Length: 222
Image (cartoon, rainbow, N blue to C red; front, side, top):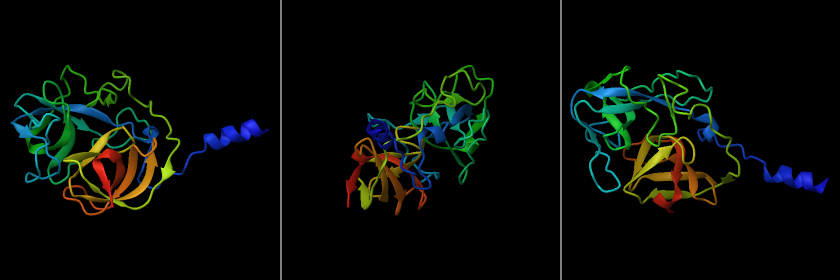
């Protein structure tokens, strides 16, 4: 049956390189942590790393009494209460909950404490994840789809953007930053190359050999 063979070929999925994931393998959650002191969100887990800037160039920070939505680990098993992502050198990853700017970054753990009774939901920076306290409240729990139409890529590239989210899946949850001048190896591409799966080579603030997806528009091909 030629039609059926064509359909199967059209939906064939490339086995992703290890360390690259589709939306069905992410499913992270967040929970609110209260800022006990004014604290900036950084591009790396250390005080000397630059503070994250908003699209308008404003430094992203939390004021006393504002909240960080602290991120959990990647959750491919769709657990309702996944573990929180561990601190790295005393910093934790999360996003600024309104009225703070909804950008993600690294904040000093010593400046924060858990605030489980906070009334606002921590649904993620784009509102499409879920609150670890109330898994069904945000509508973003266990709803990721398998990634299809992925093509292999090769070669190297340099980050040309000021900063660039390193994401678990294309258009999905960010877990780190690359910055201008960082070097990556290309592994895969999706959506006509709009998203590129990379392995970190030389980087200022991201760990070497970390893998994830970035917007290709933030790269210059080597």
